[in-house]
Image 1 (cartoon, rainbow, N blue to C red):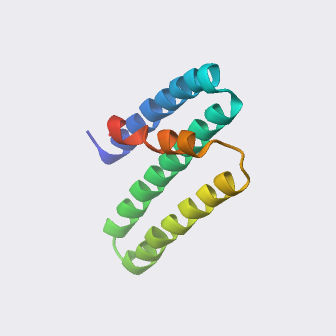
Image 2: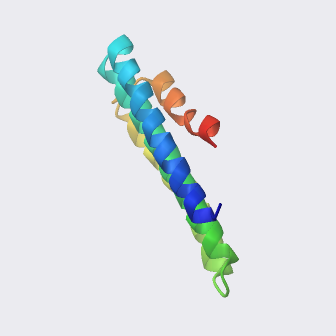
Length: 107
């Protein structure tokens, strides 16, 4: 399995799991729970894809320092997205944690 196919497979399976868990959360906990799981899952999935892209760029020739800088900026972007979601009170914080936790079992 190549790295590209691995990233694609994880993306598809994670997206399906996030949609399923978010649908169940909407039924059990309402809109705030569904939005929290969807937002947390999206942040985790985008963070994973950015990590994969940065790792592939770091391995490439002549792009080590730039790729390393982008690798670090990934954390800032993830924390900023979490701050917006939680600070605006769009979602239940526990649901965001559940959404962030969907990706690791897929990996």
